[in-house]
Amino acid sequence: MVDATHPVTFRRYQATDYAAVAALWTRINRELAPAGMEELFERYIATTIDGELRQLPEIFSEARRNAFWVVESESGIVGSFGIESHGAGDTELRRMYLDKAHRGRGIAQRMLDHAQAEARALEMQRNWPERYLQFASINQSIITAAVAFWVGLFCVVGLIFARRRSAVMMALLSFSVLVLVIAMFAIYELDHGSKGRGLAIVTGKDVQARLATADTANSVLALPSGSEVKILSTRGDWVYAALPNNLRGWIPAKDAEQVRL
Image 1 (cartoon, rainbow, N blue to C red):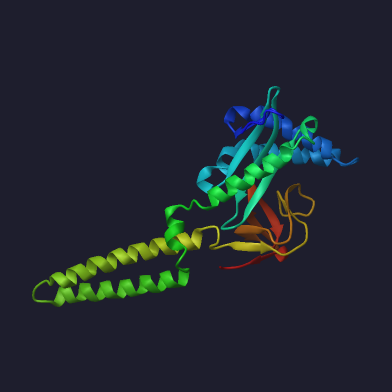
Image 2 (image 1 turned 90 degrees about the horizontal axis):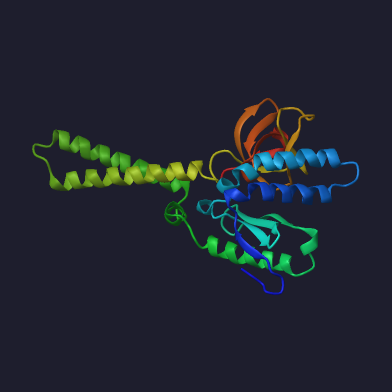
């Protein structure tokens, strides 16, 4: 995407852009650091680059309906922005940075328009498990699996005691086994997906996910109320959770309410 008036190009992030994007994120965040908080921002910059930028191709992969772009001018990379999907109809704008020299030229609006257009396009693309499993709940899948199991068991018993094998009974057994396998797969996908076991909502205000189970431990990520996390384990009054941006950290158990959808 090129504008002759403001000659910058939007293109997908590549591994060779790592150093330039790291430098961009560093100088933008240093610019944003309030007086007296420079050291805190330096830790944040280091955590962000080490925890997110190094894994950026995985975090923003198209398979997850995510994307990340750099803004390139004749002088090099002057901006970045990405979109991260959190489910149907919920896409977050991420890491939208633009160097000061290129602000006020309408570039940021173009970045936003580009991200919105791509988000709408990616939202319409569903992988095949999502397309077929969106119509069933986990309880429906469990009931289906139970019915298929008992029908299959009935067929096995019938074939054992029958004087001769029935083609109808064999066909019914094969069908019930197929249904059972599909239902078990659906149960696994629904239970272990992003909305499955361990899903929790952050209920506290400005909760800090930390590197250890202590209020004095370094912060990994600030979580506003309503953020979704996935609980991986529990230790005392803390829970270890998978966070947005593919990060992990400890948060107080009282600030996260586990749910099942």
